[in-house]
Image (cartoon, protein in one colour):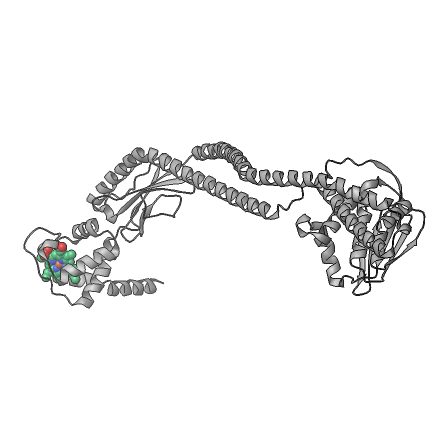
Length: 390
Length: 102
């Protein structure tokens, strides 16, 4: 579908971005909190043991203190290490393996060590802080990471499902209105076809030599108007249905096709007194005839629309392509690229010129044709369609 | 060499003199041992700063409530603050725990 979905797509994308962002924030925050919580649990599980160790150490330094340091042998244990620090955080004696001590907390982890800080009621040997150090086997960290990974993945999966559901919910009203619009356009375009064909067929049956030239002129105008409607009608059907129209690939004689299309636009060209030059060389292409006709129609229609009164259209064919050149307003050099990129990005909302070029680019893309625009302001615009040699 | 060491000793004794001259003799005379007093201060004031500050405060402005040595009547020390500071530095150096534990 080519109804403009750009703004909706944008808001959908920003919704998705926000959603993903929030999901990740929630995930990392909860992981972090879980980690902290587990750490707290593990640390406090060591607490009773650590209290016991601290008591032993304090008991011993009390003895040392009471002997006025005549007994100066500091206690050593195989299952933990300890240290004593004074009120100004100066080390009195230490057996610790790390000097990074956080005097503001009681129980904490440094690297792979756990520290417990006990403050005795009396500062034996001046020790305000007794620090107990034990190893942390860190097995719990692996368990925590494992859990974060599994539950995180589950959470992400759930959020992805929820996101999908939300996006669908979000898109449904949009889809409905687009569907409505599409059906409406399809119905009306379909009903448009019959009257327009009737007008065109009837005009063709009029014998213009039997009627006064004034009336012929009027009939020509009706003819042009009907053809324009028919042209727009075909563009619309292409846009709406091109995905459903299978291409029937056949060998197309480009010269014959171009002649037919030129004939079709003849009245329109005559009304602007535009002469059409046709330089033929053998040219064939394997593609869908109707679609290539659409491409040519759009190029011809532009060449007439943007031509000046009494201008020229030069059509040249060759083995690997054809070109249509007008003598119209032209396109400023700096805009050619823009038009080209824009037109690749163009969609139906841009209307008029845009639709035409958009269809041209879609058809060209389908059959692997390349399109070049060469132009000089107020002189000409030349559109070349080429295809690779076979 | 021996001379040099003797000189060094002399310097050290000269430097570490204030405490021995100003405090120790009287304390010895009155049977008030300075080492237990030091450890009592350590017990309550922990750090070098705390111990020295508390002693200084007490010796300059004795307050019965803050007294740690509970035997006998309170003694009003009369020492000038400069000498006291030097004496306390030496006092700390002599009995400090840091570096003496094995």
